[in-house]
Image (cartoon, rainbow, N blue to C red; front, side, top):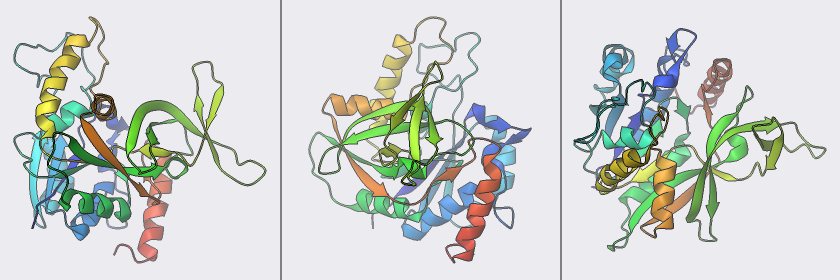
Amino acid sequence: MKHTTLVIMAAGIGSRFGGGIKQLEPVGPNGEIIMDYSIKDAISVGFDKVVFIIRKDLEKDFREVIGERIEKIVDTAYAFQELDDLPDGYTLPEGRKKPWGTGQAILSCKDIVHEPFIVINADDYYGKEAFSHIHDYLVAEHPGDDTFHFCMAGFILKNTLSEHGGVTRGLCETDDAGRLISISETKNIVKTPEDELGVSGAAIRTGDGSLKPISPDSHVSMNMWGFTPDIFQTLEAGFRDFLNAVPAGDLTAEYLLPTIVDDLLQDGKAEVSVLETHDKWFGVTYREDKEFVVNSIKELIEKGLYN
């Protein structure tokens, strides 16, 4: 049996809202957090290890809220994403407060993860379908060539929008075979009113406040990727290149998975299968989202998906 790991990114420093840590906000009837449902779904389809990426200063709270419970049901490990975890010869720029991004987060797992793995955000609910598709892909045989064979969950944009403001999504272009051609990290995508046919729309809110319509049926990435461990060597080299290219004084630049994957695609080094899922995403991007998440979890429990 091929082992597979669930990697959960929970180290985002921009995660505090209203005095709390949004990844640890209870949303279930017995105090469950979103991660509980993601872990349950992942284990149910065959993932047999969980790796939490957190900050060292959150470790105590994190273990108390979820870690100690999960350690009792599945092999569990922790990786730490820290601002000063940089390659030899690099130092933390003075004044840098923002994390280095999802690419650095995954790189923090390089000594822990040695098997195919799925990557998710801690504060997003994805649904079981996507976990199943990615697990099936990771345990399948792929050509033994010089190309990376990765996959991603292809969510439908209209199923991923917030009622309370703009969101960032990786807009995807695919070929007829469902392979990723390009991915563009796009900020401030908003839900627009229904048109006369009753179809919900979507648009990008530009810098001047105007709206640029986009198809609500577009495929988007929700940072749910299926990788093999040979990506770590590429991430290490790419992180050095990224740091060398960051302009002096730029304290917010991030090393992001969508950009990394897109660069591999454009260089012909990777083939990425987009595995379409129709489950509805939800998460706590805004504090106002919490009530919707709580109600959504309740509905899923009532349908018998969780107990």
